Length: 116
Image (tube, rainbow, N blue to C red):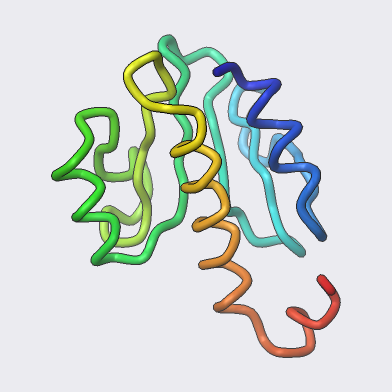
């Protein structure tokens, strides 16, 4: 997988925008202004940070070597995923979906309704 595949997948979701709010290296994907996915474009191998349910985050870290506590993020709510040949693209897409859903779930009902 590469960043362009991740980018296209994220942007097809309702209400998603992309930007570089920190510098010209860290690409973020937001839902109505709330980050659900980010990546340093210069990291090799490619890594993405995704929001995650705390219990599921621990389970993923125990199961997959490519999943670690979120780099420069809340270790409780974020994971860093090393997107390399060791992790299946289907799992990466599933974790992106989970992150998106976690952020949407935390939004007020009015904002959630804007996404439909």
